[in-house]
Image 1: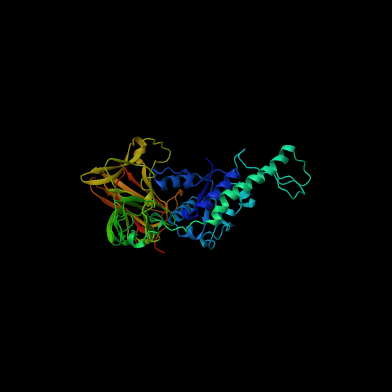
Image 2: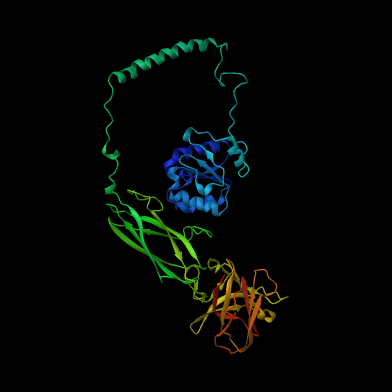
Length: 479
Protein backbone atom coordinates (compact mmCIF):
# COMPACT_ATOMS: atom_id res chain seq x y z
CA UNK A 1 0.00 0.00 0.00
CA UNK A 2 1.26 3.51 -0.83
CA UNK A 3 2.13 5.38 2.35
CA UNK A 4 4.27 8.08 3.96
CA UNK A 5 6.99 7.02 6.42
CA UNK A 6 7.81 9.36 9.34
CA UNK A 7 11.30 9.14 10.88
CA UNK A 8 11.65 10.90 14.24
CA UNK A 9 13.29 10.79 17.66
CA UNK A 10 11.17 9.28 20.43
CA UNK A 11 11.73 12.53 22.33
CA UNK A 12 9.69 14.32 19.64
CA UNK A 13 6.81 11.82 19.67
CA UNK A 14 4.14 14.44 20.44
CA UNK A 15 5.12 16.45 17.37
CA UNK A 16 5.35 13.29 15.24
CA UNK A 17 1.82 12.36 16.27
CA UNK A 18 0.60 15.84 15.35
CA UNK A 19 2.35 15.58 11.98
CA UNK A 20 0.79 12.16 11.39
CA UNK A 21 -2.72 13.41 12.24
CA UNK A 22 -2.39 16.35 9.86
CA UNK A 23 -1.14 14.15 7.02
CA UNK A 24 -3.95 11.65 7.61
CA UNK A 25 -6.47 14.49 7.73
CA UNK A 26 -5.22 15.54 4.30
CA UNK A 27 -5.92 12.01 3.03
CA UNK A 28 -2.37 10.57 3.09
CA UNK A 29 -1.82 7.10 4.62
CA UNK A 30 1.00 7.25 7.19
CA UNK A 31 3.23 4.65 8.85
CA UNK A 32 5.24 5.37 11.99
CA UNK A 33 6.53 2.80 14.45
CA UNK A 34 4.66 4.27 17.44
CA UNK A 35 1.35 3.04 16.09
CA UNK A 36 2.18 0.12 13.82
CA UNK A 37 4.71 -2.08 15.57
CA UNK A 38 3.85 -5.18 17.55
CA UNK A 39 6.12 -5.36 20.64
CA UNK A 40 7.23 -8.91 19.91
CA UNK A 41 8.47 -8.07 16.41
CA UNK A 42 12.07 -7.28 15.58
CA UNK A 43 11.88 -3.51 15.22
CA UNK A 44 14.35 -2.91 12.45
CA UNK A 45 13.00 -5.61 10.14
CA UNK A 46 9.54 -4.05 10.22
CA UNK A 47 10.93 -0.53 9.88
CA UNK A 48 13.05 -1.58 6.91
CA UNK A 49 10.04 -3.19 5.22
CA UNK A 50 8.02 0.02 5.53
CA UNK A 51 10.84 2.25 4.32
CA UNK A 52 11.28 0.01 1.27
CA UNK A 53 7.55 0.10 0.49
CA UNK A 54 6.91 3.80 1.23
CA UNK A 55 6.37 6.37 -1.51
CA UNK A 56 7.69 9.32 0.51
CA UNK A 57 9.99 9.66 3.54
CA UNK A 58 9.45 12.41 6.14
CA UNK A 59 12.33 13.10 8.52
CA UNK A 60 11.82 15.34 11.56
CA UNK A 61 15.00 17.41 11.94
CA UNK A 62 15.58 18.31 15.58
CA UNK A 63 18.37 18.53 18.12
CA UNK A 64 17.30 15.12 19.44
CA UNK A 65 16.92 13.33 16.11
CA UNK A 66 20.31 14.57 14.86
CA UNK A 67 21.98 12.34 17.47
CA UNK A 68 19.51 9.45 17.16
CA UNK A 69 20.94 6.14 15.90
CA UNK A 70 17.52 5.07 14.60
CA UNK A 71 16.92 8.25 12.59
CA UNK A 72 20.44 7.99 11.15
CA UNK A 73 19.88 4.38 10.04
CA UNK A 74 16.42 5.10 8.62
CA UNK A 75 17.67 8.12 6.65
CA UNK A 76 20.64 6.15 5.29
CA UNK A 77 18.33 3.45 3.99
CA UNK A 78 15.91 5.99 2.46
CA UNK A 79 18.81 7.72 0.70
CA UNK A 80 20.14 4.39 -0.55
CA UNK A 81 16.71 3.47 -1.94
CA UNK A 82 16.37 6.96 -3.50
CA UNK A 83 13.08 7.68 -1.76
CA UNK A 84 11.62 11.22 -2.06
CA UNK A 85 12.71 12.88 1.20
CA UNK A 86 10.69 15.65 2.90
CA UNK A 87 12.67 17.28 5.75
CA UNK A 88 10.64 19.01 8.48
CA UNK A 89 12.59 21.34 10.80
CA UNK A 90 11.35 21.17 14.40
CA UNK A 91 14.37 22.57 16.28
CA UNK A 92 18.05 23.32 15.84
CA UNK A 93 19.65 24.01 12.47
CA UNK A 94 18.84 22.41 9.10
CA UNK A 95 21.06 19.38 8.47
CA UNK A 96 23.92 19.98 6.07
CA UNK A 97 23.54 16.49 4.57
CA UNK A 98 20.05 17.55 3.32
CA UNK A 99 21.15 21.00 2.18
CA UNK A 100 20.11 20.27 -1.41
CA UNK A 101 16.48 19.56 -0.37
CA UNK A 102 13.98 22.30 0.50
CA UNK A 103 12.88 21.85 4.12
CA UNK A 104 9.65 22.93 5.82
CA UNK A 105 9.98 24.90 9.10
CA UNK A 106 7.52 23.76 11.77
CA UNK A 107 9.31 25.14 14.83
CA UNK A 108 6.02 25.88 16.62
CA UNK A 109 5.86 22.18 17.42
CA UNK A 110 2.43 20.66 17.93
CA UNK A 111 0.84 24.04 17.16
CA UNK A 112 2.47 24.16 13.72
CA UNK A 113 0.18 23.73 10.72
CA UNK A 114 1.21 21.65 7.73
CA UNK A 115 1.63 24.09 4.81
CA UNK A 116 -0.42 23.46 1.71
CA UNK A 117 2.56 23.67 -0.63
CA UNK A 118 4.02 20.65 1.20
CA UNK A 119 0.87 18.58 0.81
CA UNK A 120 0.62 19.66 -2.84
CA UNK A 121 4.19 18.46 -3.44
CA UNK A 122 3.57 15.23 -1.52
CA UNK A 123 0.51 14.46 -3.66
CA UNK A 124 2.82 13.96 -6.65
CA UNK A 125 4.23 10.87 -4.93
CA UNK A 126 1.36 9.67 -2.73
CA UNK A 127 -2.08 10.46 -4.15
CA UNK A 128 -4.55 11.26 -1.32
CA UNK A 129 -7.11 8.53 -0.77
CA UNK A 130 -10.47 9.43 -2.33
CA UNK A 131 -13.13 10.12 0.28
CA UNK A 132 -10.65 10.38 3.15
CA UNK A 133 -9.64 14.03 2.80
CA UNK A 134 -10.92 16.09 5.73
CA UNK A 135 -12.76 19.08 4.31
CA UNK A 136 -13.51 21.94 6.74
CA UNK A 137 -16.06 24.51 5.41
CA UNK A 138 -14.53 28.00 5.08
CA UNK A 139 -16.03 30.99 6.95
CA UNK A 140 -18.89 32.84 5.25
CA UNK A 141 -17.70 35.67 2.98
CA UNK A 142 -17.39 39.06 4.75
CA UNK A 143 -18.54 37.51 8.05
CA UNK A 144 -16.55 38.15 11.27
CA UNK A 145 -18.03 35.04 12.87
CA UNK A 146 -16.85 31.46 12.39
CA UNK A 147 -19.22 28.80 11.15
CA UNK A 148 -21.75 27.74 13.80
CA UNK A 149 -21.57 30.96 15.91
CA UNK A 150 -24.64 33.23 15.45
CA UNK A 151 -24.13 36.87 14.53
CA UNK A 152 -25.96 39.82 16.07
CA UNK A 153 -29.55 39.92 14.97
CA UNK A 154 -29.85 36.17 14.49
CA UNK A 155 -33.23 35.01 15.73
CA UNK A 156 -33.19 32.61 18.70
CA UNK A 157 -35.96 30.19 19.61
CA UNK A 158 -37.90 30.66 22.92
CA UNK A 159 -36.38 27.43 24.29
CA UNK A 160 -32.87 28.70 23.62
CA UNK A 161 -33.67 32.03 25.35
CA UNK A 162 -34.84 30.10 28.41
CA UNK A 163 -31.79 27.83 28.56
CA UNK A 164 -29.18 30.60 28.58
CA UNK A 165 -30.04 31.93 32.13
CA UNK A 166 -30.10 28.35 33.43
CA UNK A 167 -26.63 27.71 32.02
CA UNK A 168 -25.25 30.81 33.73
CA UNK A 169 -26.81 29.76 37.04
CA UNK A 170 -25.20 26.29 36.75
CA UNK A 171 -21.81 27.84 36.05
CA UNK A 172 -22.03 30.07 39.16
CA UNK A 173 -22.99 27.03 41.28
CA UNK A 174 -19.96 25.05 40.09
CA UNK A 175 -17.60 27.96 40.84
CA UNK A 176 -19.01 28.40 44.39
CA UNK A 177 -18.94 24.69 45.25
CA UNK A 178 -15.63 23.56 43.71
CA UNK A 179 -13.35 26.45 42.84
CA UNK A 180 -13.73 28.76 45.87
CA UNK A 181 -12.74 26.08 48.47
CA UNK A 182 -9.62 25.31 46.40
CA UNK A 183 -8.62 28.97 46.42
CA UNK A 184 -9.23 29.36 50.18
CA UNK A 185 -7.44 26.09 51.10
CA UNK A 186 -4.69 25.49 48.56
CA UNK A 187 -3.18 22.00 48.53
CA UNK A 188 0.38 21.60 49.82
CA UNK A 189 3.14 21.76 47.22
CA UNK A 190 3.68 18.56 45.26
CA UNK A 191 6.62 16.58 46.58
CA UNK A 192 8.25 13.94 44.49
CA UNK A 193 7.58 10.35 45.47
CA UNK A 194 10.29 7.70 45.27
CA UNK A 195 8.96 6.31 41.99
CA UNK A 196 9.17 9.78 40.41
CA UNK A 197 12.73 10.57 41.46
CA UNK A 198 15.30 10.79 38.68
CA UNK A 199 17.58 7.74 38.84
CA UNK A 200 21.13 8.36 39.98
CA UNK A 201 23.34 8.03 36.86
CA UNK A 202 25.96 6.24 38.96
CA UNK A 203 23.43 3.48 39.67
CA UNK A 204 22.72 2.82 35.98
CA UNK A 205 24.62 0.79 33.38
CA UNK A 206 26.42 2.52 30.53
CA UNK A 207 27.15 0.47 27.41
CA UNK A 208 30.01 1.48 25.11
CA UNK A 209 31.98 -0.04 22.25
CA UNK A 210 35.65 -0.54 23.14
CA UNK A 211 38.72 -1.70 21.25
CA UNK A 212 38.58 -3.75 18.07
CA UNK A 213 41.05 -5.79 16.06
CA UNK A 214 41.17 -7.92 12.94
CA UNK A 215 42.93 -11.22 12.44
CA UNK A 216 44.87 -11.18 10.20
CA UNK A 217 45.64 -7.50 10.72
CA UNK A 218 45.58 -6.55 7.03
CA UNK A 219 43.09 -8.84 5.27
CA UNK A 220 43.00 -9.19 1.49
CA UNK A 221 39.96 -8.87 -0.78
CA UNK A 222 37.97 -12.09 -0.71
CA UNK A 223 39.79 -13.29 2.41
CA UNK A 224 37.75 -14.26 5.45
CA UNK A 225 39.07 -12.60 8.58
CA UNK A 226 37.91 -12.41 12.19
CA UNK A 227 36.69 -9.10 13.58
CA UNK A 228 36.86 -8.93 17.40
CA UNK A 229 35.17 -6.12 19.33
CA UNK A 230 35.04 -5.42 23.07
CA UNK A 231 31.66 -4.34 24.48
CA UNK A 232 31.96 -2.50 27.80
CA UNK A 233 29.71 -1.51 30.67
CA UNK A 234 31.29 1.50 32.37
CA UNK A 235 28.26 2.11 34.59
CA UNK A 236 27.46 1.05 38.14
CA UNK A 237 24.80 -1.62 37.47
CA UNK A 238 24.31 -4.84 35.52
CA UNK A 239 23.18 -4.10 31.98
CA UNK A 240 20.82 -7.01 31.43
CA UNK A 241 20.28 -8.53 27.98
CA UNK A 242 20.59 -6.38 24.87
CA UNK A 243 21.02 -6.72 21.11
CA UNK A 244 23.84 -5.40 18.93
CA UNK A 245 24.20 -4.94 15.21
CA UNK A 246 27.11 -4.41 12.84
CA UNK A 247 26.79 -2.39 9.65
CA UNK A 248 29.50 -3.46 7.22
CA UNK A 249 29.26 -0.31 5.06
CA UNK A 250 27.74 3.10 5.76
CA UNK A 251 28.62 4.43 2.30
CA UNK A 252 27.85 3.10 -1.17
CA UNK A 253 27.19 0.27 -1.38
CA UNK A 254 25.32 0.67 1.94
CA UNK A 255 25.01 -2.57 3.93
CA UNK A 256 23.05 -2.18 7.19
CA UNK A 257 22.37 -4.91 9.75
CA UNK A 258 24.98 -7.18 8.22
CA UNK A 259 25.17 -9.09 11.50
CA UNK A 260 22.88 -9.01 14.55
CA UNK A 261 23.61 -10.65 17.90
CA UNK A 262 22.51 -10.74 21.54
CA UNK A 263 24.43 -10.39 24.80
CA UNK A 264 22.89 -11.79 27.99
CA UNK A 265 24.37 -9.01 30.10
CA UNK A 266 27.56 -7.28 31.21
CA UNK A 267 28.33 -6.65 34.90
CA UNK A 268 29.25 -3.14 36.11
CA UNK A 269 32.74 -2.10 34.98
CA UNK A 270 32.90 -5.32 32.96
CA UNK A 271 33.33 -6.17 29.30
CA UNK A 272 32.50 -8.90 26.83
CA UNK A 273 34.28 -9.76 23.59
CA UNK A 274 32.33 -10.65 20.48
CA UNK A 275 33.92 -11.94 17.28
CA UNK A 276 32.62 -12.98 13.88
CA UNK A 277 33.95 -13.79 10.39
CA UNK A 278 33.94 -11.06 7.76
CA UNK A 279 34.96 -10.78 4.12
CA UNK A 280 34.95 -7.98 1.56
CA UNK A 281 35.05 -8.47 -2.19
CA UNK A 282 37.06 -5.47 -3.27
CA UNK A 283 40.05 -3.33 -2.42
CA UNK A 284 39.85 -0.09 -0.46
CA UNK A 285 38.45 1.19 2.85
CA UNK A 286 35.01 0.49 4.31
CA UNK A 287 33.19 2.76 6.77
CA UNK A 288 31.60 0.39 9.26
CA UNK A 289 29.71 0.76 12.53
CA UNK A 290 28.78 -1.27 15.58
CA UNK A 291 25.73 -0.30 17.66
CA UNK A 292 24.87 -1.75 21.07
CA UNK A 293 21.37 -1.92 22.58
CA UNK A 294 19.80 -1.42 19.17
CA UNK A 295 16.28 -2.05 20.57
CA UNK A 296 16.72 0.48 23.45
CA UNK A 297 16.06 -2.20 26.07
CA UNK A 298 18.61 -0.93 28.61
CA UNK A 299 18.04 2.21 30.70
CA UNK A 300 21.49 3.82 30.68
CA UNK A 301 23.17 6.83 32.23
CA UNK A 302 24.26 7.91 28.74
CA UNK A 303 23.15 6.27 25.48
CA UNK A 304 25.03 8.68 23.20
CA UNK A 305 28.08 6.40 23.16
CA UNK A 306 26.20 3.27 22.02
CA UNK A 307 27.50 3.64 18.49
CA UNK A 308 31.06 3.45 17.25
CA UNK A 309 32.02 3.98 13.61
CA UNK A 310 35.38 2.66 12.41
CA UNK A 311 37.19 2.10 9.13
CA UNK A 312 38.41 -1.27 7.80
CA UNK A 313 41.08 -1.07 5.10
CA UNK A 314 42.01 -4.05 2.93
CA UNK A 315 45.56 -4.78 1.88
CA UNK A 316 46.59 -3.91 -1.66
CA UNK A 317 47.36 -7.53 -2.58
CA UNK A 318 45.89 -9.90 -5.21
CA UNK A 319 42.25 -10.94 -4.87
CA UNK A 320 42.11 -14.75 -4.84
CA UNK A 321 39.05 -16.98 -5.25
CA UNK A 322 39.68 -20.66 -4.50
CA UNK A 323 36.04 -21.92 -4.22
CA UNK A 324 36.49 -23.23 -0.68
CA UNK A 325 34.29 -20.35 0.51
CA UNK A 326 31.42 -18.35 -0.90
CA UNK A 327 30.45 -14.88 0.38
CA UNK A 328 30.14 -13.66 2.96
CA UNK A 329 32.06 -16.41 4.80
CA UNK A 330 30.28 -19.71 4.12
CA UNK A 331 32.18 -22.96 3.81
CA UNK A 332 31.31 -24.82 0.62
CA UNK A 333 29.72 -28.25 0.99
CA UNK A 334 30.21 -29.86 -2.45
CA UNK A 335 28.53 -30.42 -4.75
CA UNK A 336 27.14 -26.87 -4.73
CA UNK A 337 25.35 -25.28 -7.67
CA UNK A 338 26.29 -21.68 -8.46
CA UNK A 339 23.90 -19.03 -9.68
CA UNK A 340 24.67 -15.52 -10.84
CA UNK A 341 24.19 -14.07 -7.34
CA UNK A 342 26.42 -16.51 -5.42
CA UNK A 343 29.50 -14.25 -5.58
CA UNK A 344 27.68 -10.91 -5.93
CA UNK A 345 28.88 -9.74 -2.48
CA UNK A 346 32.41 -10.07 -3.84
CA UNK A 347 31.40 -8.07 -6.92
CA UNK A 348 31.68 -11.08 -9.25
CA UNK A 349 29.10 -12.84 -11.38
CA UNK A 350 29.76 -16.34 -12.76
CA UNK A 351 27.77 -17.71 -15.69
CA UNK A 352 27.94 -20.06 -18.69
CA UNK A 353 28.77 -18.61 -22.12
CA UNK A 354 27.53 -21.10 -24.78
CA UNK A 355 29.36 -21.30 -28.13
CA UNK A 356 27.87 -19.15 -30.95
CA UNK A 357 24.57 -20.55 -32.24
CA UNK A 358 24.25 -23.21 -29.52
CA UNK A 359 21.34 -23.52 -27.10
CA UNK A 360 22.51 -25.01 -23.80
CA UNK A 361 19.54 -24.90 -21.36
CA UNK A 362 20.99 -27.60 -19.08
CA UNK A 363 24.45 -26.05 -18.76
CA UNK A 364 25.32 -24.90 -15.25
CA UNK A 365 28.25 -24.28 -12.93
CA UNK A 366 28.88 -26.28 -9.79
CA UNK A 367 31.62 -26.69 -7.19
CA UNK A 368 32.84 -30.26 -6.75
CA UNK A 369 35.55 -31.96 -4.72
CA UNK A 370 38.25 -34.05 -6.32
CA UNK A 371 41.29 -35.48 -4.51
CA UNK A 372 40.90 -32.92 -1.75
CA UNK A 373 40.64 -29.97 -4.16
CA UNK A 374 37.51 -27.89 -4.75
CA UNK A 375 36.88 -27.20 -8.43
CA UNK A 376 34.44 -25.05 -10.36
CA UNK A 377 33.30 -27.02 -13.39
CA UNK A 378 30.83 -26.85 -16.24
CA UNK A 379 28.07 -29.40 -15.81
CA UNK A 380 25.19 -30.56 -17.98
CA UNK A 381 26.96 -29.88 -21.29
CA UNK A 382 26.66 -32.27 -24.24
CA UNK A 383 27.33 -32.00 -27.96
CA UNK A 384 28.33 -28.52 -29.06
CA UNK A 385 27.69 -27.21 -25.54
CA UNK A 386 30.89 -28.94 -24.36
CA UNK A 387 32.74 -25.98 -25.88
CA UNK A 388 30.94 -23.52 -23.59
CA UNK A 389 33.12 -21.09 -21.67
CA UNK A 390 33.01 -20.00 -18.03
CA UNK A 391 32.23 -16.28 -17.96
CA UNK A 392 33.14 -13.97 -15.04
CA UNK A 393 31.78 -10.40 -14.88
CA UNK A 394 33.62 -7.89 -12.69
CA UNK A 395 30.74 -5.82 -11.33
CA UNK A 396 32.27 -3.03 -9.25
CA UNK A 397 35.25 -1.77 -11.21
CA UNK A 398 38.01 -2.91 -13.53
CA UNK A 399 40.89 -5.22 -12.61
CA UNK A 400 44.35 -4.93 -14.12
CA UNK A 401 45.24 -8.58 -14.73
CA UNK A 402 43.82 -12.09 -14.29
CA UNK A 403 45.44 -15.50 -13.70
CA UNK A 404 43.44 -18.75 -13.81
CA UNK A 405 44.54 -22.17 -12.57
CA UNK A 406 42.91 -25.06 -14.46
CA UNK A 407 42.74 -28.77 -13.76
CA UNK A 408 41.77 -30.51 -17.03
CA UNK A 409 40.18 -33.90 -16.62
CA UNK A 410 41.87 -35.26 -19.77
CA UNK A 411 44.63 -34.30 -22.16
CA UNK A 412 43.65 -30.95 -23.70
CA UNK A 413 44.94 -29.33 -26.84
CA UNK A 414 44.67 -25.75 -25.59
CA UNK A 415 43.13 -23.43 -23.01
CA UNK A 416 42.35 -19.80 -23.75
CA UNK A 417 41.69 -16.84 -21.45
CA UNK A 418 39.71 -14.03 -23.13
CA UNK A 419 39.81 -10.52 -21.60
CA UNK A 420 37.15 -7.85 -22.30
CA UNK A 421 37.08 -4.16 -21.39
CA UNK A 422 33.30 -4.03 -20.83
CA UNK A 423 30.48 -6.36 -19.85
CA UNK A 424 28.88 -6.11 -23.29
CA UNK A 425 31.98 -6.11 -25.53
CA UNK A 426 31.74 -8.46 -28.51
CA UNK A 427 35.47 -8.67 -29.21
CA UNK A 428 38.13 -9.40 -26.60
CA UNK A 429 40.61 -6.78 -25.52
CA UNK A 430 43.27 -9.46 -25.33
CA UNK A 431 43.52 -13.26 -25.21
CA UNK A 432 46.19 -15.66 -24.04
CA UNK A 433 46.49 -19.35 -24.96
CA UNK A 434 48.19 -22.30 -23.30
CA UNK A 435 48.96 -25.26 -25.58
CA UNK A 436 49.02 -28.98 -24.70
CA UNK A 437 47.63 -29.22 -21.18
CA UNK A 438 48.24 -32.62 -19.54
CA UNK A 439 45.20 -34.22 -17.93
CA UNK A 440 44.91 -34.26 -14.15
CA UNK A 441 47.67 -31.70 -13.57
CA UNK A 442 47.11 -28.04 -12.56
CA UNK A 443 48.03 -25.55 -15.25
CA UNK A 444 48.17 -21.79 -14.90
CA UNK A 445 47.07 -19.51 -17.71
CA UNK A 446 47.06 -15.75 -17.41
CA UNK A 447 47.64 -12.21 -18.49
CA UNK A 448 50.96 -10.40 -18.65
CA UNK A 449 51.33 -9.02 -15.12
CA UNK A 450 53.68 -6.29 -16.33
CA UNK A 451 50.95 -4.78 -18.51
CA UNK A 452 48.17 -2.63 -17.07
CA UNK A 453 44.74 -3.28 -18.58
CA UNK A 454 41.15 -2.35 -17.78
CA UNK A 455 39.36 -5.71 -17.51
CA UNK A 456 35.61 -5.87 -16.75
CA UNK A 457 34.95 -9.41 -17.99
CA UNK A 458 36.91 -12.57 -18.73
CA UNK A 459 36.06 -15.99 -20.15
CA UNK A 460 37.87 -19.34 -19.97
CA UNK A 461 37.54 -22.07 -22.63
CA UNK A 462 39.14 -25.47 -23.38
CA UNK A 463 39.59 -27.26 -26.71
CA UNK A 464 38.52 -29.96 -26.39
CA UNK A 465 37.21 -30.74 -22.93
CA UNK A 466 35.12 -29.27 -20.13
CA UNK A 467 36.39 -26.25 -18.17
CA UNK A 468 37.43 -27.03 -14.58
CA UNK A 469 38.91 -24.18 -12.52
CA UNK A 470 40.70 -24.59 -9.19
CA UNK A 471 41.69 -20.96 -8.58
CA UNK A 472 41.26 -17.42 -9.95
CA UNK A 473 43.58 -14.54 -9.01
CA UNK A 474 42.77 -10.92 -9.92
CA UNK A 475 45.21 -8.02 -9.64
CA UNK A 476 44.22 -4.45 -8.86
CA UNK A 477 44.35 -2.04 -11.75
CA UNK A 478 47.19 0.43 -11.28
CA UNK A 479 46.78 4.10 -12.25
